Figure 1 (cartoon, rainbow, N blue to C red):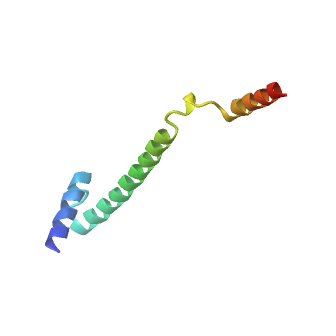
Figure 2: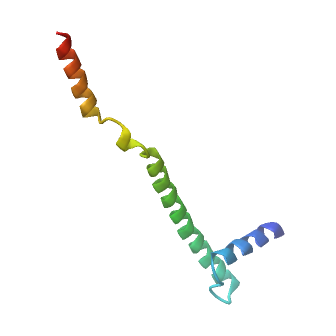
Figure 3: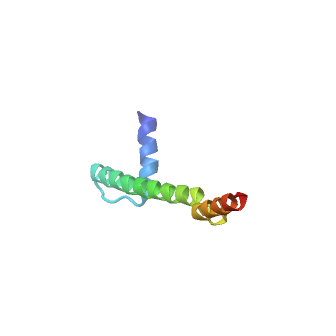
Length: 78
């Protein structure tokens, strides 16, 4: 239990200065800051995932051009 309390204290201090002289109130504020940090982290992960997913999209041939090329090839066969 002491280790968990120590980790919480380090985390709360890492989030910013103590918000109040009352420990309980400061813990609540640190909890709110943790939720805000979590939403920032999740948002950034989604942005990074989208960038990675679409990294080389501009080098690919669009599907409408591929479809047009297949039509031209089929017409030349006849």
